Image 1 (cartoon, rainbow, N blue to C red):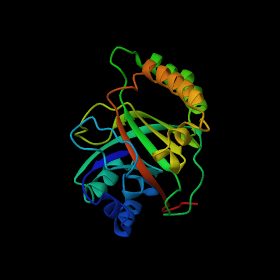
Image 2 (image 1 turned 45 degrees about the horizontal axis):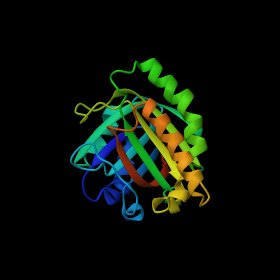
Image 3 (image 1 turned 135 degrees about the horizontal axis):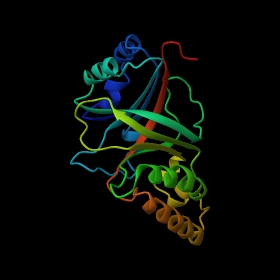
Image 4 (image 1 turned 90 degrees about the vertical axis):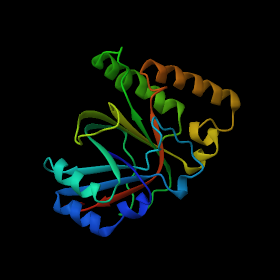
Length: 224
């Protein structure tokens, strides 16, 4: 997975010539999460001076990270990448090749607190927090990516996880739609309280990048 910064990323990353170079590098599936005009009303958070403009996910049968990184650098002014171990608590629905999914796809780029041992952090996140996150939000897709190692030389900061959650598009401007509270303010407050308490236990309440995005999936070489 890669984070990218820069202008015109939606046009650059959806370019067919880039996709062909990725195929040549061994990529069989590509996912683009683009902070574009379709998600303009949504909330975004940056740890640095600039918001992440895109999150790029690639799948290949072999370790093609060097070739993939080289291809993506031609299309992005600034890039940071990681090999990840993916988990799917709620598998996202399939979407047609290259078509925008009707959803708000939030990607959070996260760091483990230094005072929390890795195994304890993983247990709190993957075991304790996951059911709370699912029960307190209107997510219909939930993907957890645990960072294994960086694949670029100059990541701007330490990153330990990237999480994608899919929400109804109305969630960009309607908290009840985002949290699935059905217009009930008491229920909304209860869900927020439970979620934020759990988030604080794993350190995901600070030092994060939050990227609202439009989600595109491309089946490339060998794709189904």
